[in-house]
Amino acid sequence: MTPTNGRQADRLPETAAEGRTPSTPWHRKLLCVLFAIICFEIGVYLVLAPWGDSWKSNYFATLRFSFLDGIQGADWWRKIWASPYFRGAISGIGMVNIYISICEIFRLRRFAAGAD
Image 1 (tube, one colour):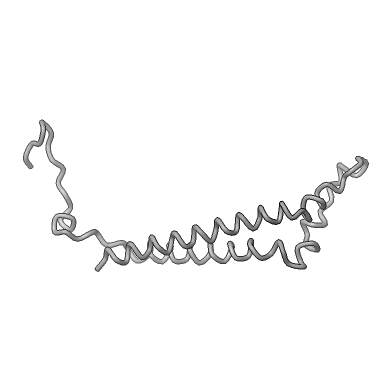
Image 2: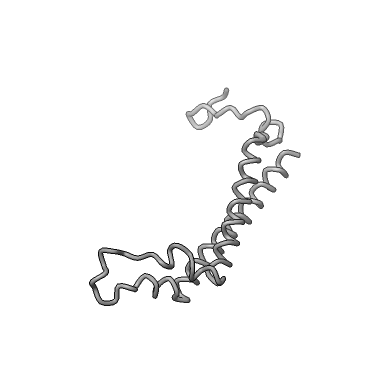
């Protein structure tokens, strides 16, 4: 090792010195693929589910807060749940999940391209 500007130069790994990038282990690639698939499925569900017929009849739509029974306007949760703004927010979270899955696929392609 030769000194550079008063400091010792870092030794590069042999694969980087030869011009190749280190390969990624197969289990990291598999986890990346599984993560992308799960994010995509969750995203599609969150985009489509709020606009379906079952949205108004699931457990959370009929949830009652017993400590608010005597208060006027205690059905605030059902109003929020049925609101198109709330449904749009849930769909927006689904779009973020789809975007994350697409980014993961492109990241995986970059790893695959570096292995050649």
